[in-house]
Length: 199
Image (cartoon, rainbow, N blue to C red; front, side, top):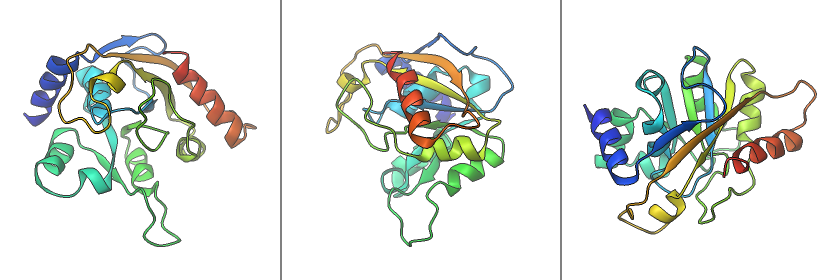
C-alpha cells in the first residue's frame, strides 16, 4: 500500500518516466542500478521508474544517518521501498560499510546505488567512490546498469523542502561487467562515463 502511494506521488510530482536505452526492462538477472545523485528524490524516482516486477526485488541503498532515525522517514524507507541502510562513517576501524549491501546481494536482491556517495548540485556526477568496484568484484554475476536521472538536480536541489514540478526522465543505459584484469581506477572511470553519456 505505501509502495503504491509512493510511486503514485513521485510520478505525480516529477514524472519519473523510464527510458530503456540499453538493457531491457525485464529479465531474470540480478542488477545494481548505479546513477548520478543530486536530490533526495533520486532513489524514489529511479525505483518508481522500474516496472513492478523489477521494483519488487530492487532495494534502494539509503544513508543510515538520514533515513534510519525513526519516525515517518524511516517508516517510508522500510515499509515503502525496503531500503538497505548503509553507514557513511565507520564506528570502528574494522567495520565494513558495504556489508549490508553484500548481504542484500547474497540474498538475491537487486540494488539502487549512488557511487558518488553524496548529493551534488551539478548535472553531471562527481567522481565515483570505490564501493561499486568492490561490489562488482565480490558479485561478478550481478549486472551493473548505468542510469542517468535528468532534471532532479533542479526539481529538488540540496536544501529545498518542496520539489519544483519538472518532468524527470530516468534513462537506463547499457549493462556493464568488471573485466577480469581491470583495476579500480579504470573500472570507475568506465562506469562514470557510462552514466555521463546518458546525460
